[in-house]
Length: 316
Image 1 (tube, rainbow, N blue to C red):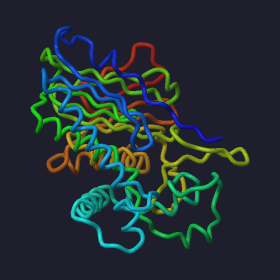
Image 2: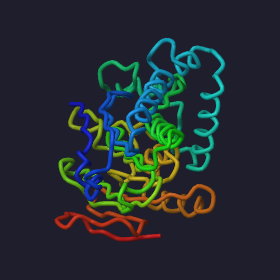
Image 3: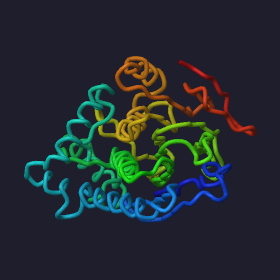
């Protein structure tokens, strides 16, 4: 059967320690096929700033929805030239794809549909070799849409005078500044083998985006074999690396979102090599979980959970 994992409830960890009298505004919305939670701190301007950020997310949802006639992506897939914003996002996606040696590909829409994971999909099924060889290369921004939305929402909040905010985009998290009391945020990273629990917590004291991808999120079973939604662009089949989840921590949301998918395709060693290669131009941190019970992390602010089933190792 298919399975969609709900987002972790992060409020207790994220907001602990906030000043009780700090004025805030919160909103829960449904966009990009997920529930998003916004909490903004900004005195009397918090509510209006939040309104602006939510409108921006809705705008991007309409812009990037591949299966909705009238969206910019739908128009592009039907032969129209991209508008300026879409062209810029395409260029950035191509840049990330090159940095990840093709492990991220924004043109997997047709293949995702064949497997039953795309916006134009029917029932889940295993496509034939002939179908995969002849599949259309359709633009699909599912791998960067939430990252771009979080990045833009954060920019809108900042433009409206907000200095502290947290946005939960269905499990991914965008942070603006420190907590209102000046302390660090603490973000829970879900345990891929028990999504009601968490692998550990990540401390952050400034703007960052935390994106997690995993083979446990969406899948189906056929003839006793499990097929997940993270496709290897080289084979158009579910990726076969040893990773079951990858968390990327990066200041830029689009990079974090795209690289979380790419890393699941690449595997641990290639992901760490890519991180070292991009250290000067596009720095990011990783928390990786393998299918044999190992967990690797590159950031000093990560603290493993006390009652964990994993063997943890900090790497560079």
